[in-house]
Amino acid sequence: MENILVIGASGQIGSELVMALRTQYGNEHVFATDIKPAPRDVMESGPFQVLDVLDEKQMVHFVIRNKITQIYHLAAVLSGNAERIPIQAWDINMRSLLNILDLAREVKVKKVFWPSSIAVFGPTTPRVNTPQFTVMEPTTVYGISKLAGERWLEYYFRRYGLDCRSIRYPGLISYKTEAGGGTTDYAVEIYYEAIRKGSYECFLKEDTMLPMMFMEDAIRATIELMELPSDKVSVRSSYNVAGISFCPKEVADAIRQHLPEFEITYKPDFRQAIADSWPQSIDDSYARANNGWKHEYDLTKMTSVMLAEIAKKIER
Ligand code: AKB
Image (tube, rainbow, N blue to C red; front, side, top):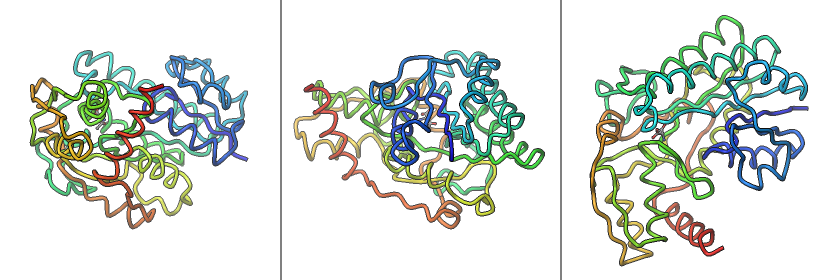
């Protein structure tokens, strides 16, 4: 029997991943932690504890006490926020990962999942159909921490045999928990503002093309990767996984199919330079070959779900 720990359970990915894992593995087998309270369903449907991933001692006790066999470590400072506090962000992102890798090795946790990001790529990377293996010279502190993290995952796998797995997430779009501090977050905010105000001021230029993915696809990609037999996981740094690519103007057009009066204006800020250093689209043929990965949501389907769900949420 697996006992799974999700660290960062109150965040955008964590809050949905916990619920998906609980459906699959049973509520009492999926333990959720975060430094802040999680959405109600996460806190009420199974074990939840406020716990700081940087608190090594408490973390070890928690993992031993609950006989944890798998860890998903999702806590991180995202790209936009990290640029505001670079040294602190590096410290939080790296120290938390190293704590978890070392703990997992010592306590003999079977598998660890850690999210990487398209932020590992930089301006010298081919931006269209970015390959799995290519030039990686990130210019953001978030990207540097993700690239270093990928190297640590592979190191722990090769040196200690720790079964580490990872995905380079594109921008993730969801309606349940609002994202915080990322460069791709405009693609979540735009839907909320479309429902709340009928207009949105975008912090990226209208033609800024970035790789994106609907959360349901991302959760499925994650669980599918974690369920793969170990010998089928050929990439031990992190898998490129693609969904859709679009720019702000295209999302605005898709929203107008439902809300014809919707208006968008553009006021690029410091996040434009970050977006300009990232890929526009991703080649995920390794993930497709290894895990049979395939995304299900395109921009049109995702837009219908986002608008309908956010409207319900705001009415309540
Ligand atoms: C961000 O924008 O920082 C994240 C990411 C692409 O990793 N969504």
